[in-house]
Amino acid sequence: MKSTQKKVSGADLPTPAHGFIFESAAGKNRICRSVQNLFQPVRRYKSQPIGNDAQQLSESVSPLWSGEETAAMLIAGKIQNLRLAARYMDGIVVPAGQVFSFWKQTGRMTRRRRYALGRELREGCIIPSIGGGICQLSNAIYDAALKAGLEIVERHRHSQVIAGSLAEHDRDATVFWNYIDLRLQAPFPWQLQVHIDDKHLSVRIFAQETQKKPNLPDTQSLPPDAMGDCSRCGRTDCYLYVGDIPLHTHKTWLVTDEEWAEFTLYRKENQTEQDKMLTSSSRYVANFYSRLMRRIHLRLGHPLPVAQNSRYSRITRALIKKLDASDTYLVIPQDLLSWLWMEGELRGRTFDVLMNALPVPELQR
Image 1 (cartoon, helix red, strand yellow):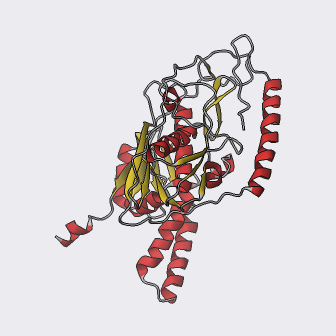
Image 2: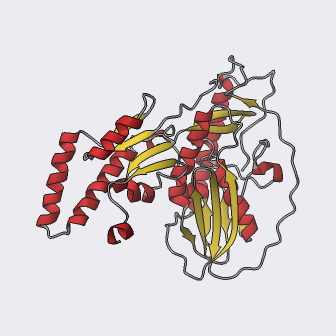
Image 3: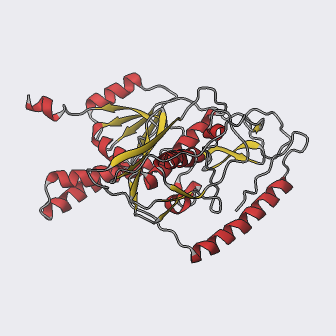
């Protein structure tokens, strides 16, 4: 199925009519793909171990920041989108002969699901859109799949080549909900792992059996295309124009309902006017709820750590709802570290941990 994207020259700027035509064509294609999926259903896979004898077949690594971006807030939005999508990708095991579908695995990307404005290539321009930038993940999965020798069931090139991307080597795979998909298959079970630190996105493919080294298809070097960029083109008469969207650097302090004295003093000495402070809820309500839940757990005979873990899990979920793409640098209490890590909220972020207890080895010493 072909993309409805088209290249627009500088003399023929996109208008609201272009947008209506594009959305109408996209809507028709989405309906067609939905009908097709009824007759050729694909599954969503869960994260699970693949076995101790699994071997890494391939890896694809790409930077999150190039250092030359405009509209840095859209890059932060891209990282937010990658962070959320990685939850549905990391650790999944695809059985032998089954088809992996990018969109079946992630679902549609909407504001309600906390996806943010990122950079999307459309109609010859780089524009802001919800879920934009997610192609960095589909590019990396496709690149790793080729190296691992997986069968490419469906893949679409980008309509244009962006400088510095895998498209320059014909190793890209664009996606657009839901009819432009990336689908993979293999005669053996394989696992997909997605890792995001503060600088890079890494995609790895593992399998239990040792596979023969695949013969990679010949690729050609493609020169980058000239295209518009809504963040700096200056064509204010274009309906897509948004101008530069800067990212205001700040620390985001996560505060629980029990802020100990040392934390309070440290925050007052180091917090600036630009920093954000997020609390889980009203302190009085939180303290009452915490005491109530602790009594319930103890009445049921649960150990005290079980009651504490339930409380920290609830606080973490409440704080996550308040985080957004601009929160790239977190200051977190030690009690919430493991919960934020398991929820994937530390992917693509830098963070400091304020310790309220020494490490266990130090306590034992």
